[in-house]
Image (cartoon, rainbow, N blue to C red; front, side, top):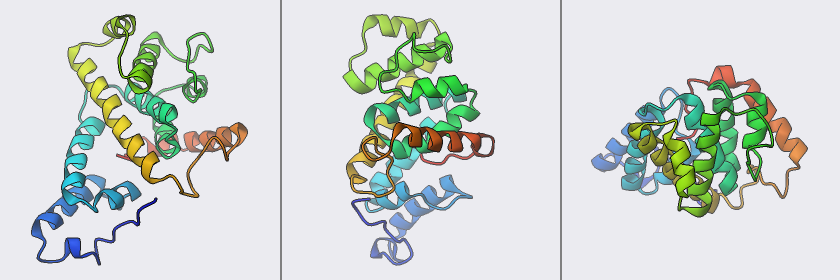
Length: 218
């Protein structure tokens, strides 16, 4: 990260007399439990009110919608690819696989230009999710024909939840990319070959059964 991670044990922000900030820290920690705070948390906590709002919003989007696992993770993975957020892809690709996306579907999802006809690894409903996510992320405005296709597969509640998921993870990915620009650990198309990226993704996806209940990023 371009910013140092905050240490809640030593930072004055979370000293004993900072009761509001410590309450926020407790809420973020509770959502992550039993896992420790993640690098994203330790960056956001430089501003406790922002971290608190982020925790509440992303917690709802991540764990409280009616979207199926495959649809939610397909949307998140496509946002990651469109925005070059490889940290986000690395955490959510295994969850997409665990949610039921096929190996061929995973290969399609990581294409820069994800167009129907390049493979049969996604269902019509999953393709509608991909097209909607890509239009929202790349162009903001969604063409009527793309939205009309979405309505064939999702009711009003699900469309609100899917739209919120795409919007939320655009926020996540843009935050990560902007602040992680010099990280040696980032997965960047310019420094990692496609074959290496494939190997990393395959290795992560092989762990999918063990990660299905683990919310690794947000």
